[in-house]
Length: 344
Figure 1 (cartoon, rainbow, N blue to C red):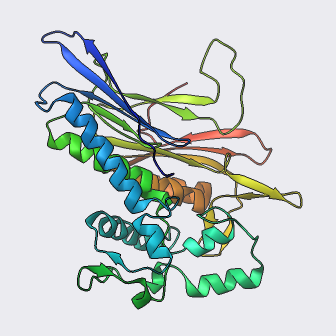
Figure 2 (figure 1 turned 45 degrees about the vertical axis):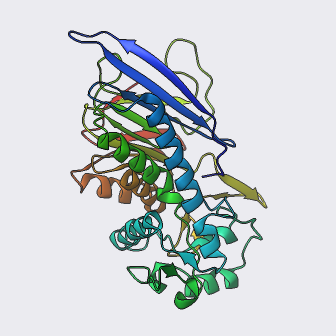
């Protein structure tokens, strides 16, 4: 989540259905190398569109100044620098979410292992390529296991010094959590049909055509289009059921580096301290609970690999998933849970 320079764009689309016209709006904000998009039906919403746009912009700024590790003045950056920070509901909330996911995953997700991710160059600092000794030291001195379930607040402040100067990284849930924050606001003003896209996606209800929302699933290779089927880079189109759903894809095919002829993926197993080595290329997870859960579990899948991810997805009725992997011959294969609706 990079530091945001917001320039909002508002588009209004009117769609006539069987009955009163539904009015959909699209609000988009641009950032340094990233953007967000919110599409929603104004039917039943009495708040002016301009007010909605300003409220979303304010939430995005709040998220950035609280949770972005790339913003050196954000609360998480100041906390990671050892600075005492004022108590903040959003900071405390995402910490609770992260702690629960750490416990649930048995340590496969670790939001207190920022120093480990930084060491490999996939966090908020440049990599120095850690030695085995450095990795072992980081494993012994970082991680959620060294932290309390609730961050202590004393006189309105959170002091990292009282916890041994931990460093936090919420990248595995921050974008999904951001979707949930904005969706919560939209629900609060009466919206029912929406798609919130902040790199990850939360959707509910119907699109402007009166149909369930559809989302493209990336194919984890550079693939030219033949002009007759899917756009370049897409493996298929997921279609929602019209019910609330967060959908997130995590993969190792875009963020990696090669050193001495060896490929190092950006997914670090915080239990071992090393990048994962398995045949799972990408994991797309749909959760009916919230987008933060989809975000976290997609990363969890990428840590534990194909078979573990299948068991994880099938074992939770709130989840559906789509996994792309390579077989023993190096051929790309796909696996989908029974309720994952994909159109090729």
